[in-house]
Length: 281
Ligand SMILES: [Fe+2]
Ligand SMILES: [Fe+2]
Image (cartoon, rainbow, N blue to C red):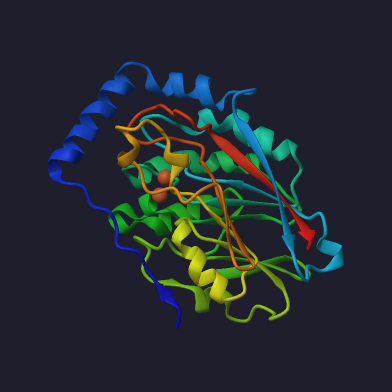
């Protein structure tokens, strides 16, 4: 059984109170409108293009495109209507499949439920898939969020997989910090051995386990690209392993995400979607 986990970061009460105070002040000062116009509006939202060489990729999958969006963080700085430009931009890229790698909420499940209907804007011939991030398990109401996303046409991959095209498997695991159990064996059970496998893992630390299982590509988020890349504030966010990491034959791509937490601000990183093209290596 490949149950994997990472110890969650827990902040002290004092530090959490400080975060909440700063967040409330930013919200009252118009942080949401600022974030939308500065990072999510047409022309500001970044499309990052990546090509991944995969040995043994089936000939008919050469050139297959996947779009990835991550870390929406509905809540004080983002609501459903703020996502319109970014989601339409991704849909216009006409990817063959679209994946969402978690953190729909920030503090409360209601935040994820509010943004979920917006994902009807995403349509792809191979389908739209999602996993949860650590923020989505608050009050253990993730089943409600899953239902809302599925109503918007998003297939949840909770330690499960789906084949959007012959020779290709997209697997998803529960979040490594909060979604116990994260079970890679269960996620891959019944998947054809010779299929090219893509793993959705909100937390980038899924990489080493994925490499052991012959997964070609891991798509993660969680780090927000550091979000505020200033020396004093850098320690506020989770460790960012790099945009693209190679571990043996497995490639990890880490999205900088869409939304923000703590401050409605990004420094040294943009809000982005990835457009990934698979190539025969
Ligand atoms: Fe996040
Ligand atoms: Fe996260």
